[in-house]
Length: 204
Image (cartoon, rainbow, N blue to C red; front, side, top):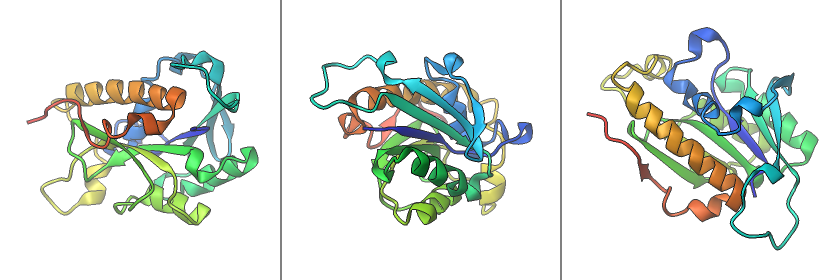
């Protein structure tokens, strides 16, 4: 069961609408987002939710941790591990009970995917977290941003979503936020294989 959710991205108003901040953008779509009380901790913004606020389909056979922790690292993307790992260590949360929400070059805009462990796809935020834990054995909710038709990957991920892309992104974030709530209530395994690669909206 997931105990810590991390929304990867870069802090600062200038990065707020970037493709690289897709994970952070999703946080605002959670149904309980407005009630989360964010505070500065663990080199990021931290909030907590009482698990009893989630509707579970059936009673759990084993007692679950009573709280779900949320974190937005403010270390900048390539140093995300410096925020995630201390928070996980403090609350004694193992990597397999952590879910990172992040942008994904290898998925086209309009899609999202849930996976556990595996390759990092060159993502600097994931690489930093893996380096801190010594393992890639954590969950990821991947928000597709697609690859550009040029070689400037850094420029692409640090550019804002366009006006034409905005309606598609909105659909993806809404659907992915609902999926995240399900993952927290039922366990991420319940969403597989439906969310192995979920096509949510078309962008042309």
